[in-house]
Image 1 (tube, rainbow, N blue to C red):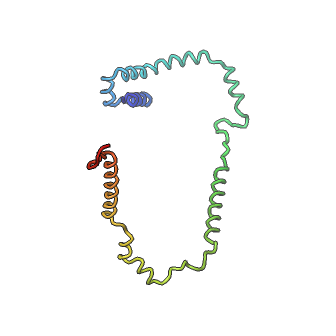
Image 2: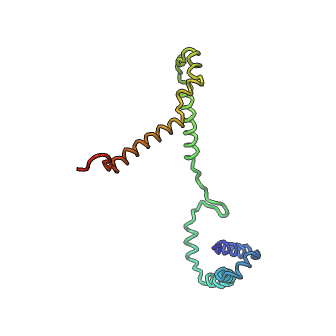
Image 3: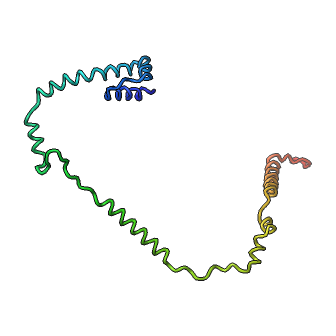
Amino acid sequence: MFCPIYKWKISQAMDSGKTISSNVHKHMRRCDSCREYAELCTSLKPKFTQDKQAILEDFDESLNKKIMLAIPERAELGTEPRRRTLALIPSLATAITVLVISVSIIFLSLPRSKQPPPLGPISTLISAASPENILLKVESPLEKEYTELKRAFESTSKFLISSFDFRIGQQAK
Protein backbone atom coordinates (compact mmCIF):
# COMPACT_ATOMS: atom_id res chain seq x y z
CA MET A 1 0.00 0.00 0.00
CA PHE A 2 2.84 2.39 0.87
CA CYS A 3 5.28 0.91 -1.65
CA PRO A 4 5.31 4.03 -3.88
CA ILE A 5 6.41 6.08 -0.87
CA TYR A 6 9.13 3.60 0.05
CA LYS A 7 10.30 3.46 -3.57
CA TRP A 8 10.48 7.24 -3.64
CA LYS A 9 12.57 7.17 -0.43
CA ILE A 10 14.87 4.53 -1.97
CA SER A 11 15.29 6.62 -5.10
CA GLN A 12 16.01 9.77 -3.09
CA ALA A 13 18.64 7.95 -1.02
CA MET A 14 20.32 6.55 -4.14
CA ASP A 15 20.29 9.92 -5.94
CA SER A 16 21.70 11.85 -2.99
CA GLY A 17 24.25 9.20 -2.02
CA LYS A 18 22.82 8.90 1.48
CA THR A 19 22.10 5.64 3.25
CA ILE A 20 18.64 4.13 3.23
CA SER A 21 16.78 4.65 6.51
CA SER A 22 16.11 1.78 8.89
CA ASN A 23 12.32 1.78 8.41
CA VAL A 24 12.83 1.45 4.63
CA HIS A 25 15.27 -1.45 5.22
CA LYS A 26 12.67 -3.09 7.46
CA HIS A 27 10.04 -2.70 4.72
CA MET A 28 12.43 -4.04 2.07
CA ARG A 29 12.93 -7.26 4.09
CA ARG A 30 9.17 -7.91 3.84
CA CYS A 31 8.44 -6.54 0.34
CA ASP A 32 9.87 -8.23 -2.75
CA SER A 33 8.87 -5.39 -5.07
CA CYS A 34 10.73 -2.73 -3.09
CA ARG A 35 13.76 -4.99 -2.69
CA GLU A 36 13.91 -5.51 -6.47
CA TYR A 37 13.52 -1.77 -6.99
CA ALA A 38 16.46 -1.07 -4.68
CA GLU A 39 18.57 -3.62 -6.58
CA LEU A 40 17.60 -1.97 -9.87
CA CYS A 41 18.57 1.44 -8.52
CA THR A 42 22.00 0.19 -7.41
CA SER A 43 22.61 -1.45 -10.80
CA LEU A 44 21.78 1.72 -12.76
CA LYS A 45 25.02 3.56 -12.01
CA PRO A 46 27.36 0.92 -13.51
CA LYS A 47 25.03 0.52 -16.50
CA PHE A 48 25.01 4.27 -17.05
CA THR A 49 28.80 4.49 -17.06
CA GLN A 50 28.96 1.68 -19.66
CA ASP A 51 26.28 3.36 -21.79
CA LYS A 52 28.03 6.73 -21.46
CA GLN A 53 31.15 5.34 -23.10
CA ALA A 54 29.11 3.83 -25.93
CA ILE A 55 27.26 7.08 -26.51
CA LEU A 56 30.43 9.14 -26.55
CA GLU A 57 32.06 6.76 -29.06
CA ASP A 58 29.11 7.12 -31.46
CA PHE A 59 28.93 10.92 -31.06
CA ASP A 60 28.21 12.77 -34.30
CA GLU A 61 30.01 16.11 -34.61
CA SER A 62 27.58 17.36 -37.28
CA LEU A 63 24.74 17.31 -34.75
CA ASN A 64 26.80 19.49 -32.45
CA LYS A 65 27.38 21.98 -35.32
CA LYS A 66 23.64 22.08 -36.12
CA ILE A 67 22.85 22.88 -32.50
CA MET A 68 25.47 25.63 -32.36
CA LEU A 69 24.12 27.19 -35.55
CA ALA A 70 20.60 27.19 -34.15
CA ILE A 71 21.67 29.36 -31.19
CA PRO A 72 21.17 33.05 -31.97
CA GLU A 73 24.39 34.96 -32.72
CA ARG A 74 23.76 37.75 -30.26
CA ALA A 75 23.68 35.32 -27.35
CA GLU A 76 27.12 35.46 -25.80
CA LEU A 77 28.77 32.54 -24.15
CA GLY A 78 27.92 32.28 -20.47
CA THR A 79 24.92 34.63 -20.55
CA GLU A 80 21.30 33.71 -20.64
CA PRO A 81 19.16 34.92 -23.51
CA ARG A 82 16.98 37.91 -22.67
CA ARG A 83 13.49 37.12 -21.62
CA ARG A 84 10.74 39.57 -22.24
CA THR A 85 8.70 40.19 -19.18
CA LEU A 86 5.04 40.57 -19.80
CA ALA A 87 4.03 44.06 -18.82
CA LEU A 88 0.45 43.21 -19.63
CA ILE A 89 -0.44 41.54 -16.32
CA PRO A 90 0.76 44.36 -14.02
CA SER A 91 -0.83 46.98 -16.27
CA LEU A 92 -4.15 45.14 -16.25
CA ALA A 93 -4.02 44.83 -12.46
CA THR A 94 -3.33 48.57 -12.19
CA ALA A 95 -6.18 49.42 -14.57
CA ILE A 96 -8.64 47.27 -12.61
CA THR A 97 -7.52 48.85 -9.33
CA VAL A 98 -8.00 52.35 -10.74
CA LEU A 99 -11.43 51.37 -12.06
CA VAL A 100 -12.55 49.95 -8.71
CA ILE A 101 -11.34 53.03 -6.82
CA SER A 102 -13.06 55.36 -9.33
CA VAL A 103 -16.37 53.52 -9.07
CA SER A 104 -16.22 53.53 -5.28
CA ILE A 105 -15.47 57.28 -5.19
CA ILE A 106 -18.39 57.96 -7.54
CA PHE A 107 -20.68 55.75 -5.46
CA LEU A 108 -19.66 57.45 -2.22
CA SER A 109 -20.04 60.96 -3.66
CA LEU A 110 -23.60 60.47 -4.97
CA PRO A 111 -26.15 62.59 -3.08
CA ARG A 112 -28.27 60.78 -0.59
CA SER A 113 -31.89 61.58 0.17
CA LYS A 114 -32.12 64.46 2.62
CA GLN A 115 -35.24 63.25 4.42
CA PRO A 116 -34.95 60.27 6.72
CA PRO A 117 -37.85 57.86 6.48
CA PRO A 118 -40.74 58.87 8.74
CA LEU A 119 -40.80 56.88 11.95
CA GLY A 120 -43.80 58.54 13.51
CA PRO A 121 -44.11 59.42 17.15
CA ILE A 122 -41.87 57.56 19.56
CA SER A 123 -44.85 56.40 21.62
CA THR A 124 -46.16 54.30 18.71
CA LEU A 125 -42.73 52.70 18.29
CA ILE A 126 -42.57 51.87 21.98
CA SER A 127 -46.09 50.47 22.06
CA ALA A 128 -45.42 48.38 18.95
CA ALA A 129 -42.32 46.92 20.58
CA SER A 130 -44.01 46.16 23.89
CA PRO A 131 -43.80 42.57 25.12
CA GLU A 132 -47.59 42.21 25.20
CA ASN A 133 -47.93 43.03 21.48
CA ILE A 134 -45.03 40.80 20.55
CA LEU A 135 -46.47 37.86 22.54
CA LEU A 136 -49.87 38.32 20.90
CA LYS A 137 -48.25 38.14 17.45
CA VAL A 138 -46.18 35.07 18.26
CA GLU A 139 -48.11 31.84 17.83
CA SER A 140 -47.83 29.38 20.67
CA PRO A 141 -46.17 26.12 19.62
CA LEU A 142 -48.46 24.10 21.90
CA GLU A 143 -51.52 25.71 20.40
CA LYS A 144 -50.27 25.04 16.89
CA GLU A 145 -49.50 21.41 17.76
CA TYR A 146 -52.98 20.99 19.27
CA THR A 147 -54.73 22.32 16.15
CA GLU A 148 -52.59 20.09 13.88
CA LEU A 149 -53.36 17.01 15.99
CA LYS A 150 -57.07 17.90 15.99
CA ARG A 151 -57.09 18.16 12.17
CA ALA A 152 -55.19 14.90 11.81
CA PHE A 153 -57.60 13.11 14.19
CA GLU A 154 -60.67 14.41 12.34
CA SER A 155 -59.19 13.41 8.98
CA THR A 156 -58.27 9.94 10.23
CA SER A 157 -61.68 9.36 11.81
CA LYS A 158 -63.50 10.37 8.58
CA PHE A 159 -61.28 8.01 6.57
CA LEU A 160 -61.90 5.12 8.96
CA ILE A 161 -65.65 5.72 9.04
CA SER A 162 -65.83 5.74 5.24
CA SER A 163 -63.68 2.60 4.97
CA PHE A 164 -65.39 0.53 7.67
CA ASP A 165 -68.98 1.60 7.24
CA PHE A 166 -70.86 -1.50 8.35
CA ARG A 167 -74.23 0.29 8.48
CA ILE A 168 -74.80 -0.68 12.06
CA GLY A 169 -78.37 -0.05 13.10
CA GLN A 170 -79.66 0.03 9.55
CA GLN A 171 -81.35 -2.76 7.67
CA ALA A 172 -79.25 -4.30 4.94
CA LYS A 173 -81.12 -4.30 1.68
